[in-house]
Length: 287
Length: 287
Image 1: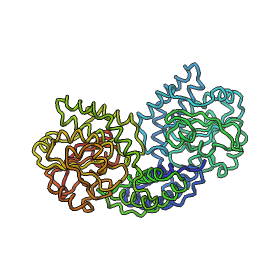
Image 2: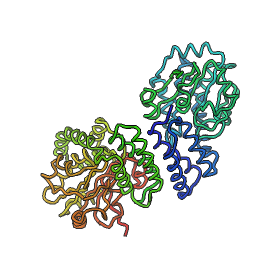
Image 3: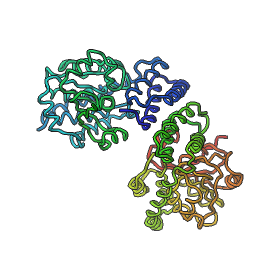
Image 4: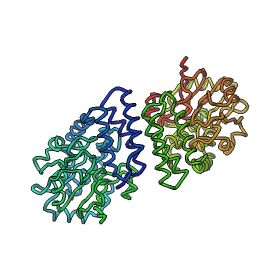
């Protein structure tokens, strides 16, 4: 997916968010923002939004020296989510359709996205979870059930910290012995890395790998060889979040389901799904 | 008021909004946005937000050749507002406190602001008007009533097209013979100019002037001499909208009431009033 101009105001806001997390000095915020504006004015918009965000955040890290500006947010979101988890586990267990119940909750957890929005309150997260089962789920549920039922090797691409705690509900439903969970290779915005997968306890119910990359999505050509092999060999890929959708939509893998909450108008338009709803989209390969 | 960095994403969005209204050609949108980003990266942030917006929109007009990108929106908003007006006039007449009823409706009309938001639906406007009387009105209402009661010469600074129709409800309450309504001197975003004041019928109940300027606010030093004289001679100024607040807050006039709907987090923080509420703030002169 190329980058529409509508992303630019969002990149500018992300820059400001990140540099304010790295420094308390307004003079540094101004210097960083001016430099990044200049830099954005020359960006190659044929790249995908996660590829451009990757480059912007690399430059931000160079300027500020802060390798993980969102570290505190991520830890706080994990703790918040862990507190919400026990009743949700019971809800899934008691459900007549636990796979879809867990899928809806995992997608609702995708609200925890500091790329799409500057901040997030506890009540935003709680409301998303409470109403998860009633949100429109756009996609072919029968195809999804069949794919989950027949898959031998499932690769689950995680998105954000906090959200990854709710992914556990779905990964438990997918069953042990066939799921590999992939996280980012380095901190980028509030995306999940290995430490978040461990906090979620995913290493006890699945194989956890990282993709070797610092993009807030999955830029296959930049991922590690071992990740690429795992990607190619998986007969089902469950891909969480807008960033993975923006970077993998149209790729050559024949069996990907993109699960995300539609959080911005640009993605709503590109995916043709209303803002706020839950997407469960199959990959449309561009051959 | 100087310009906080939080305004920058908003300026970038405004640029995109305006150039899309001026041209259907994506290549032109990209060229304009890149140029304006470069230009914003070097802006003097000691200027107020309306002063910077003025310069950005001047540059946009130079590039696109379109002197009034929001012309259609403004006409549509005026027509929409005129349709809503008759029942609101009856509501004010029937009210036990017509001055405050009309003040709340005039502030609710300030939702029609394409500087603060890209688009606006009929239902947004209707909801704002229906709930106007119940929205928190932050300010010293007794001081406001006393100022209105004793003023001999009132200068009413209008803000946007559409909104100006609802201003009529308040201007009628202020009474004939002492009100001058000032609009912008040239089209800028969806701000009201003479034609909008005429559409609202304000020329029949008040004196209408323009301020001679193309800023989306009131930059006194750039306004016409006749406007400046009127400003100095008024013993009460009623100033509508965030743009007038951002450019006049702290100025030397001793008796200004700023009426606006708090529509963005930056203004909410600077005015110390919750987002969504109605402001009726007295000028705090910076001497």
